[in-house]
Every structure is written in structure tokens, then in C-alpha cells.
Image (cartoon, rainbow, N blue to C red; front, side, top):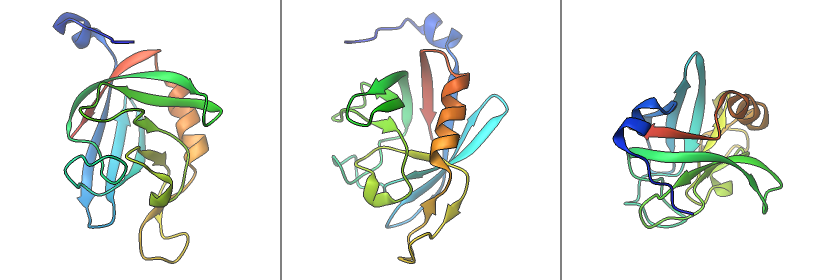
Length: 142
């Protein structure tokens, strides 16, 4: 289903901001802000928007809350990311659990000793964020 919004509708929509703070060869570390809520986000490295191995390009995206049939829980899903499908914010701790998606959480820690930052407390973080959002909104990635 395509979502088409006018510029006025976009201005009225709630907006999440994701600011990339550290780009590494093995991952991208970001901060997510929505109203008074703030958390960290683990992403794949920037490899020119290659499917399944790269973070998405910076930009302003439409997004929605949806039940993920494959995951069995609610996720945040981007709409119309160029050359990509099913880009989501979902649960997970490690970059090996990401195929271009984003993992929101509490802190960056190397949980498994592989020298790649991981992220903690993703279920509680995503659930809290979902509870604050309308059904459709915007995400600005910079």
C-alpha cells in the first residue's frame, strides 16, 4: 500500500529524529529522539544502501507501526526506502541480527566479546517508543 502525503500533512505529522553519531567500518551508532524520549540505535555500516548489509540512506521517511508476521510482535516499519523493503526498528542485540534494519536500545556494550558494539534492552525500549507513537509518522535520519 502506497502512502501519499501532502507537504502540509507531513508538517502536521509527529517526527522521530535519528542522528548518526559514530560511523564505523562494522556498524553505525545513532541516537533516537522523540519528544522527551531518547534512546540509542544500532545500525549496519554505511555501504551505499546495499541490501541486507548497509544502513539506509539519510533522509526523511514515512513510517508506520505494524504487526510483523515474521517476528510476531509490533515493529516500526519505514515506507518507501529507495531500493529497500521491510526496513524496521525491531528487537535484537547484535549487528548479525540486522538486514538493513535498526535496533533501538538503552546502551552500546560489547556483549559477546567480538569488539563490535551491541545494544541492550531493545524490547523494553521499542515497546516504550511504540506506546507513544501514532499509527503513522515521519522519521528523519541524519
